[in-house]
Image (tube, rainbow, N blue to C red; front, side):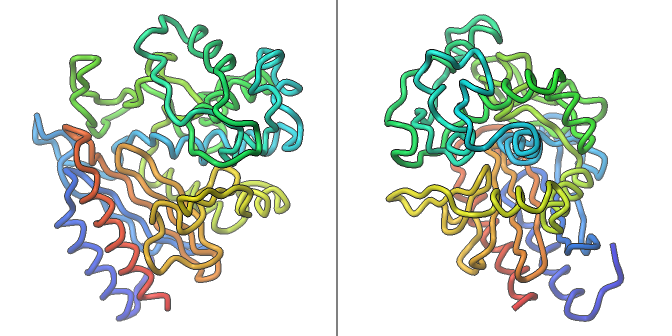
Length: 336
């Protein structure tokens, strides 16, 4: 942690108080600017069944943060944004989704359904990928935006084919993230009814689990330090080349629910992710298990939240959302 002014000390103490009151068993928070990490702490219980406290070296399930920190930069650097998926990935040929461009898939306007529970009937990774590629579209590509895991699931497969490397290898090379099983202590997530056990160190997302744990939409694990470094690279503009960074953080799709999407990233006011004080150029992402990244380029700061809000059950996500708003407002107040 860097040296603090009196004002920074005040906001850091406010963050600590919020963390102590968090409606999640364990929570990790970092605040950073383009050059330094200003605040980084972990608190709470990693596993309520054992009482083990969470610590700075714990691995956290990144859930859909996998999309933006693992799959997105690989897609941006390896695939032509305006090429149809069928040109980049042979298994998409002859299927409706093959007509969607890489840009449309990244911005959730490929016409894919929001949710498909492949894991309930598919027996293998190959079967899930084949079913996802052949899925009927709910609208024509470019006909409207609807957040969906399936675009990133398919793009993850395309990137692996293009690179000749697995997403696990690509993630390790770029950021040090790993796909499960993790090499150390992990923060527990849900008591999964489908698997019949508490999930610790393996991906919470059922489709990703049924794919062997490695997928483009979910499955990566990271420590607070690793996630902070990856998010800080986006804030500083060093994650991908400049023109790709500009493209990723521009608005490419919107819908009647006030959702706006860049390439992978969510733009305000999408689902209130940035809180009421979100800046006009801000962007971020969330993960179902209780994660959030929010970046404010004009104000010069970013925030990472990692938590296990689904431990031991996924019911009632609203307290987590409200807590994130309080946290983001506390940090925003310091930068007004």
